[in-house]
Length: 403
Image (tube, rainbow, N blue to C red; front, side):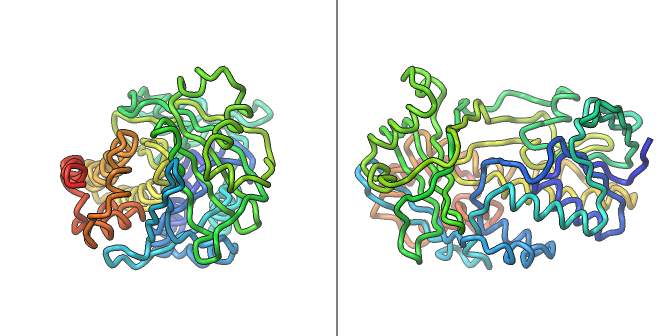
């Protein structure tokens, strides 16, 4: 049996940032990662709040060194090619007004390698199979079917879509969000925007909000592209993934023009029913962070932001716990995280109900509302000075009626 201060399940951004923070405080950390890195994963568009968290934890220079394309904002495009540009620099005074578009296999690997350099023991191809909460013992099987046990003072589940502890401890609950599919590939050769807007993400509205698409450019000339829709919208076409993808592109005037000379670099893939929720984010000797807690929807690129926010916060809580300080997990972790999650959630609801579309394309928006929207979409969902961070639904509804 291996003894360690903290076992972290999962080597993605949430696990890596928490590991770096704990290691800098002198704690021993063992990371159990099911896959070999680098590994492919979607969710490549970051928000300015990510930069602030990376900067706070001494990691921003490492990310800047990778030469990622700078993301300055988001451009919403409707079926008639009408555009609404959200520039992240037009915010409510936050320090960071840009972020990066990253290949997650590279970004995640850089963060995990940094944790290794700081002293983390990272074990790849280890699948967690059991958790004894009473003794805080994790059991895992490696790729040769050998069993290993780890006794920790604290266990952090940062396993993302794997949701290891939620499954082992029966913490999963159905999400309030409708289950949707993400159908995706990578391409090259599409028409890119002029340099000042080249790094913006395109969010393309299709078929009267029945589906939407992301287009995320990378610095090497390749691009991530995906379609998000309810399962029936795809299945009722009786088309293959490739046929469905091509049909959506061919029937949207903006996409057809933009992708006229584009070619796919990999087969079209799918992630089904991705939204998830949780009964609680912590318990005796353990906590959850990142997508192991809740995953909402990719439309506003909130995934990595919530992963980094939660890991930054949870690492502080673990440090206090290990020092015997009795942290208030309910107030300072779960309630805090739910404030931001719920703001994002209401924006996701409003997006699929068509409310945000009306607000985005409304010509009557005040300067304050424009800045407030830019700040929310930048990931600053805990800013108490933002119009939308309290009574979010009611305020969205009020704006819709005014528009």
